[in-house]
Length: 98
Image 1 (cartoon, rainbow, N blue to C red):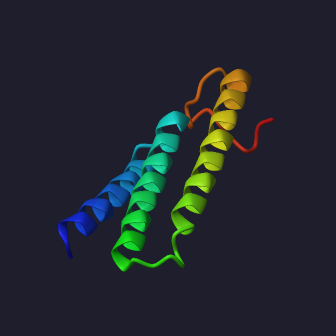
Image 2 (cartoon, rainbow, N blue to C red):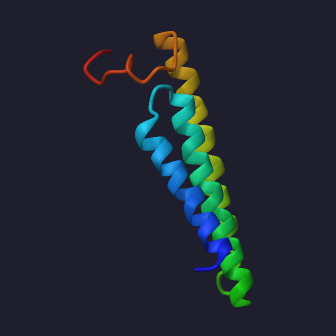
């Protein structure tokens, strides 16, 4: 495993562990998801550059577009929960309450 592969694998795993173990606020969960998506984008971009293939050249841009859509939907949910519940703490959110 090359150092670049190790670096992007470790950044993805750091985002995953942050998402799994540090779930106090919705904003921190969204930041962990965004870090995971950015590490996947950079890894996919480097992979297409290493292969010198034009077949996969649109894949990183498609992933970046999905990442932007995910970020905007997450921020909309953050604003909605902050307005209805008063904070973005995940312990306050319950599916059983209206």
